[in-house]
Amino acid sequence: MTDLAPESGTAAPGNAQPGGGNAQAYSVSELAFALKRTIEDAYGFVRLRGELSKVTFHGNGHVYLDIKDERASISGVIWKGNVRQLNVRPETGLEVIVTGKVTTFPGRSQYQIIIETMEPAGMGALLAQLERLKARLAAEGLFAADRKRPLPAMPRVIGVVTSPTGAVIRDILHRIRDRWPCRVIVWPVVVQGDQAAAQVRAAIQGFDALPPGGPIPRPDLLIVARGGGSVEDLWPFNDEALARAVAATTIPLISAVGHETDTTLIDFVSDRRAPTPTAAAEMATPVFAELAAQVADYSRRMTQCGERTLEHRRTRLSAAARGLPRPTDLMAIATQRLDLVAGRLGAALEKNVAAHRQDHVRVASRLRPGLLERPIQVGRQRLGASAERLAPAVRRRLERSADRMAGVEKLGLLLERPIQNGAQRLAASADRLAPAVHRRLERSVERLVALEKLRLSLNPDGPLSRGFARIHDAEGRLIRSAGAMSAGEAVRMHFADGDRQAVVDGAASLPPGVAAPPAPRPAPPRPARPKPGDPGQGDLF
Image: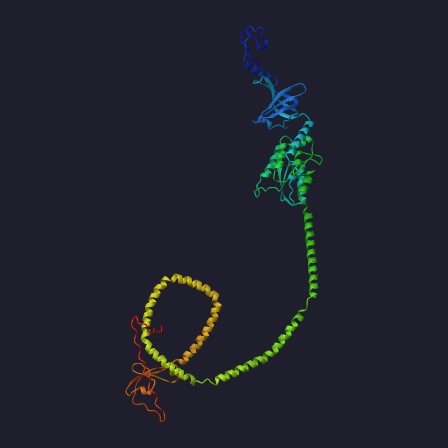
């Protein structure tokens, strides 16, 4: 024990004479701290039992309270570092046993106890505290039925929070293995003692923090399990922080703590309570054999329903078919009409052919080769005259056309791109118009063939291959009669295989009774070329 040492010739404060004398005067601080040291040395560690009152949770984390009994009261303080380690939450009216050291607060000259540990004074106090906590959580709505989530019907992953060495985990794994093939992830924790509540809470929060699709699969369902025991053994599952963690998790949770008669706080907060850990495994998983049998039964019933439906439709179809006429009856009249028309078709075709044959004979009797000779001669004469008149004009026209073609080539270079685009569009249009164009081309080919036959028949060189010859004078004019030639005149004879020069030797002699052919008609005078600016007949091009 420590005390203040008075100077020589003075007495201690407690031994000072009433008159004062020569006793030294101490300051209030010296006396207060002397008493503080004296009390701390005398009561360094005490165990105190009493009822809590005036419990105040300060904003800095400290807790201030009073401990009292029937005749006395003492102030107490719990520092922030010790609040988190308490087994019970300080509440007014709770009877507790605290452990700490007695000291004084010099600022108010009062003594107090610094509390380090706190525990309920008896089971009645624990249960009373639990009831008050249950009432508070129920008022917050944590026990409401509408917040209970349904359990997944066929979970793929189940998370189990329990001790890895007890019989509970073996019972759960064995039951799940017999009922449903799924993956089970065990988070090992202690289920009894001061650290049990914190470890179980950390396991639930750890499962809830797993991301979907991560390396560790996120469970579809959680089971918190523990075997039976006394109220003290199961007390960690009455922790408020653990109950709030169970309520905050997003994974459906089954509480399986203790036996059927045991009840803890997390049983009210969890989504489903199981009387035993084995029952929790049965709640979490369906029976695979029962599902397979149910699926087989559904398949059988579906097959039967399909067969009944087909039979019903078949019956309705048969009934409807009986009310419809037979196909042979519907086609009988049309068949008779077809047979009648087919019988008259042959005679009608023969009659039609005979009528056309008569028309052909009537027209063919009026057609003779001589009818075409005169038009051919006239056309030959006109063709020769026109060729002679048009030769110079054609030559000039060709020269101008050559100049125009040169200009067109230059213009074509400028229009090459538009022409290509037009060709592409024309090709697209041609694809659409190909059938119609094809038909028109066929008709044009037929007309062209007919014209070619007519050209060959009117060709002046055609008779040369049959032994005839064509005679021209020295200037190249065609000689059409013998009277147009004079003796000694040079002429050119054109045969099918070449030309020959000849000289007329005398007057032409005609057989008796044959009149001389008429003299050739003189060629009409060639019209003069119109002067520039004088409107006249244009050229044929």
